[in-house]
Image 1 (cartoon, rainbow, N blue to C red):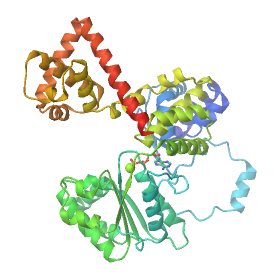
Image 2 (image 1 turned 90 degrees about the horizontal axis):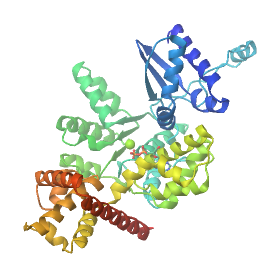
Image 3 (image 1 turned 60 degrees about the horizontal axis):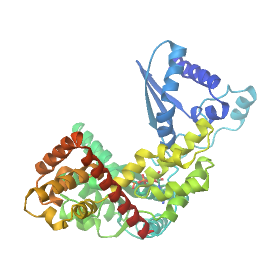
Image 4 (image 1 turned 180 degrees about the vertical axis):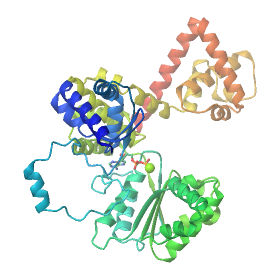
Length: 462
Ligand code: ADP
Ligand code: MG
């Protein structure tokens, strides 16, 4: 980077150092690296998602301000993540004469192989529980004897349940061995982009060589291939070449190959040749263990009560679970205040809201509304439309729309109607609501009941 730019960033850090408490500066600002300044845009880099989300939420305005103070200009900031960045503070003290002598006497060790793997995604940092032990064991076996244990290994599961983590753990494990082979980790999207570039630049041969001569191909988010025929064709040949060379293939997907719409049958069958494993939603004990591990890694000390509270409430996505932990930890570290339950609810309101929406089903809305109006659920779904049924039906549609994450078409089909009917129902209830206080009370009562029902259902699972 330009010397002048470096200076600008160092000056801004100097300013922040003066304005912030030391430990906060060291923990959150010193870990940032300035990657690029072009025009009025500054690209900053941190070593993991936690720093990114935390800084974005709490410190961007302050950093912007510091840059403005030292430069007299305003900048647009962009925070990016580079997993290979160490989390050591990036702002360095001036090198002392003694350090310089030392570094000349002890030249740095040979550089490690450069990969695009996240070094933190290892088997060590992966918490094993009933929801993932099979996937974990299969991944371990594949890492220990690539191409001999299970080939291909196909890992599937919902968003944020650890697919990328496990896949990269395999890569990191193979690389840590003495006779490490050539590993290629890529996402299906990056594979597509490289393919297109190869087509445009007439370098298909090079592209093919790159992917077909690896010892292990780790290809993430393979569901992305669905409905892309040309890409599937190319991947088909890549797959065959690697497989015939007796090299390892690992894939992840958000659902089983057979359920991917628009995936060629010959690919589906190949994807099922080896072992197919699923990552499920972790149970509450596993969630607590994951949070504890995260606290350890990030050196956070958080009340066990609070850890348990977060683990209990957030169950569908581990990334979200970690996000909640960071939010709470940063609040505590920023304000120095103790976090009580009311504060927790407030800090996590958006996340909790999303979780609740996930948990509430259209069926539970239908049931509660039918009960309230003394009807049967079948009445709500049937073809009749006398007023005493039509109105409750509209209310149920409205609540389905506002209390779940489902789309109009999905709600429509749950009521055996089309999506326009649901849109119309929502508008009608909205309108009525604005002028009818009794309706507002009824709606809030129904919302409460539906929420309670879902909570009770949750508890019976635990
Ligand atoms: P996916 O690829 O399935 O969307 P990721 O692998 O990106 O999910 O996982 C999301 C986050 O959750 C990552 O930070 C990952 O380290 C963490 N994570 C997932 N499962 C575990 C686990 N079993 N133990 C520890 N961390 C986990
Ligand atoms: Mg992923």
